[in-house]
Image (cartoon, rainbow, N blue to C red; front, side):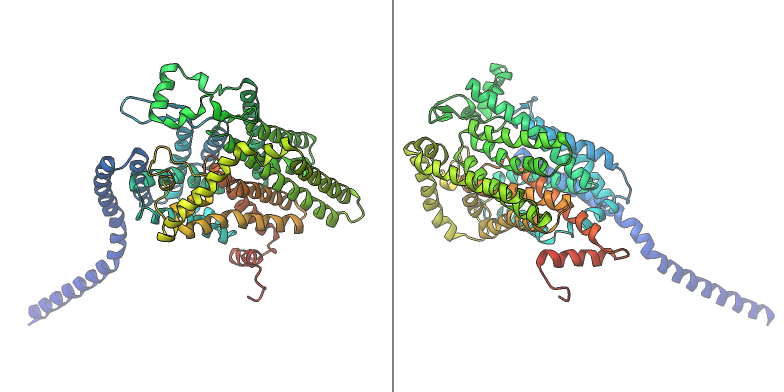
Amino acid sequence: MTTRLGNRFALSHITSVAMAETRLAGRAAPNLLRRLVPIVAWAVASVVLGIVLGFSAVILPPMGSFGIVAVAGLVLLWVMPDLPLVSRGLIRRAFFVMLIVDLVVPFYYTVQFSGLPWISARRVVTFALIAPFVVAVAASSDVRRMIAERLRASPLIIVCAAGFLVMGLLSLITSLSAAESMSGLVDAILSWYVPFFAMIYIIKNNDDVVFILKIICVCALVVTAAGVLEFRLEQNFFLKIFPPSMLGNLMANNPRLQDLLPGPEHFRNGHYRAESIFMTAISFSEFEVIVIPIGLFFAFHSKSLFDKVLGWTVAIAALVGIFASGSRGGYTGAIVSVPVFIGMWSIRTAIQRRASLAPAIVGAAGLILVGCVLGLIVFSHTIHDMILGGAAQASSTDARYFQWQIALPYIKSNPITGYGFDVGGALVGQGNLAYQSIDSYYLSLVLEVGVPGLFLFSGMLLLPILYGVRAYLSDMSEYGAMAGALACSFIGFAQSRLVVSQRENHTVIFALLAIMIVANYEHARRRAPQGQGARAMRDRHYRAQTALPEGG
């Protein structure tokens, strides 16, 4: 009897232990699954990557294939453990190198290796930035959190920037050439958006913002000097660096480079039209319009004598560069943005120093200058033809109106998603993708990414203008002065977009947009009361941007 009771006790004990172990194993299963999920995800993503790589290599151009593989690689990095694999300092150095090269090196400075496409100097330095930055974002939640916190300071701008990219992706569905659109969209992501987010990450404070603006000014002097020298020599000396055989191969692979060779189209009103590092003279003048307000920011608001001299030199040199380009768009952009800056400076100074006569004097001088320019346009045949164009440019003006007439039926047919990113010229250019040319970027946008894409891109330009003008007149700090200057840069760029469709200055504009976002974040952080939480700070700045009442 005793043995039987002992056996019963042993069996019940074993059963209870087994049930307890089962419960413990059940509780530990989620932890085990969490450890297994990254391994399974890595394996599945690797298999999918191989399939997608083979598929994209067959049907897509090189840039499109690279984009597909890059997205898959990012997925692989995302499932890695959360580790700080890349230092912020390395990304900062790579970014500054990329910025300088993009500003002073022509994009057609390329090399070719057997079996590979042409590799430009700009893409090399851009990839040198992309690689560490993407690894840092994918492998570190702290990096993602830092970027997201700064983006929340400018929600409306981010909505427009992200929405424009989404419209570009949606346009692939209705694209005339999905491969070309994919290639152009990947190039835009790598050249505009990745440096944009990298810049938001690497900028530490307003001192970094001012330093980057100085780099842009110094590079602008180099670009202007190159344009003036080209204007003087009446030939593109950047092409002279290439050996004849290499130059011939370049032009065979990219027929547009033939436009850089001296020809009748390089002269207007008897003057040579310089292009500097750009593909067209109007892109050169557009760049000068962008940097003039930045130079005026240092000239009017810097306390350092060196910075003041740098600012005046940049502003005056940019006007000389516009003359060397012979671009009507450059003249009109400067005529719009410079008086706006002078008017804002007069109002700001009058608010800041009520007893000073400087605002009245400068404001009156600005009005007189604008009146003189308008008078010269009206009464001087030479100035009128130089700024607005004469009989020789009438055909160019008529061609712009004709392009809108051609495009209207297409716009009515598909006003939502357009006909594919970067291929709108095929509609206006009779289906020829190799020689596409549209003389208005707003027309390009509505054809390529639809009316929503046009409004979103316009929002990317108008919002910084509104925020910058408001900050310039209400905030007397360095942030307000810088924001107002950037607003004038966006004004000049928005005006020039009426008559030019080239995207050569988009990297600079996205860089200025990133500067505006970081400056908004730093401004909101400094103005937040002591002890205020991050969420309350963001809510306060969001109300300030959207003009909502405190109780809203």
